Amino acid sequence: MLQLLLLLVALSPVVFLVGLVKPKWILFWMKEPDRLWASSLGLVMFMATFTAYSEMRVRHKAALDAAIKQQRERGSPDRQNELQLDRLRY
Image (cartoon, rainbow, N blue to C red; front, side, top):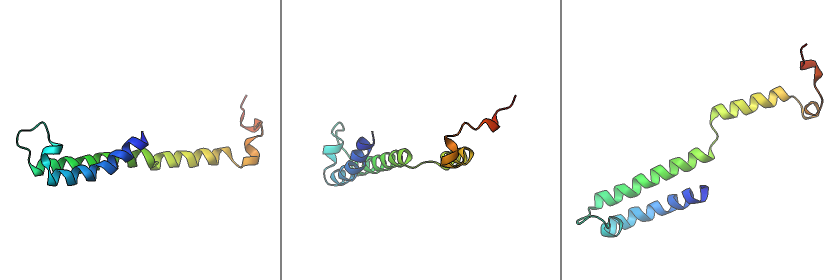
């Protein structure tokens, strides 16, 4: 999935530039395509794919806080392998 998003991020400037030069190639379904629509399509494509890529790659602050809290609860690596019977309540 990440490779697809990276491909689309790399392809969107090409769509933008081709849309500025030959908008008919990008907007082939329109009778009279406009350069504004073709370049807007490239820009929107770039923003959407780059945002999706960064959302998939960057960990959110809440997830980082939860990971740090879980690591603190476990304690040291030596203590992780112990039975930790002191936490049991009868």
